Image (cartoon, rainbow, N blue to C red; front, side, top):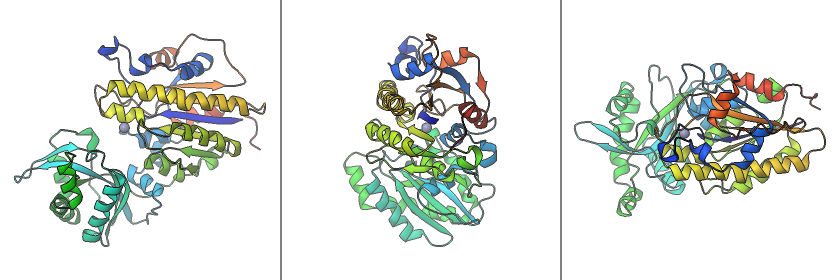
Length: 408
Ligand SMILES: [Zn+2]
């Protein structure tokens, strides 16, 4: 038996007036996902336990069969794993965004852009490396990642620090959150010097001249220590591979003992290499029991509040990921069968531009039990109407793996 979990990040949404009260998922043409829903089972999964923030970190841990309450220690340690950074027991990792802030001399801080205009990896690498050369020394180091997403590692304690994700505060006054860093002298000094240092860096001068958002400061969040996670093989006895463009997901895969497959041209947005991801997933399934494919684009469109782009991202996910993987698994099937799940990690409603923690719709197709067409397409509403709620990652994995033959 082979298993595929195909995740459209942030695909869920609320009814949109412009769409006559339909959601983007309902409005999009998604014949492949509809086939899975109509001939399989539809249900809801609670990916965000009560009291947890509705982030991709917590939600994707649930989609991989984990109980976030047992294993989640913050977002940044998972990203550190994906960047090959091994945290020592006394170190804390913080996600470090390059951001565009509006800072007044009176100390007011406004979040203009959580991504510094989706700054390129090459520009960002130069800025973060320059910051680390200038200010990084024990106990504080900076590590460049992809685009605006970087990492700060702090040897010591940040007890009492509660941070917020910058993408939840676009355009807002964030002075109160900024001042929280000031309780930690090393962070306070770093942040006070980072702004002026970055402002005069040639890369930012060139960005301003080109009409782009400057990366004029950093924003720290997602802090945590190394998670103690059993692997998915230890928990469920299945081997697996994970495919994603996003460091966070790769980190979850590494911590979960999955093979993390890097697909050239996987960007995390509408221009990602869909075909490469689908082919890599099918290749991985020749060796492994399970493949987990994550596509970021619907979430990014949701954060930007772009309706047309979100529908496009959902249709691309359907036609360029779900369809070829379903067809490929059907063609590869040696008679032992397969189960394929279409999923999302959380809702990213375009009207809210951020995540919310409603239970998400999932559809599960078993190739050996193709049901009579139920007439229910893959949608938020139809999954709610199906009346089955799984309350945790382990409940989902037990359902996915139920009745499986012994793993050879
Ligand atoms: Zn998101």
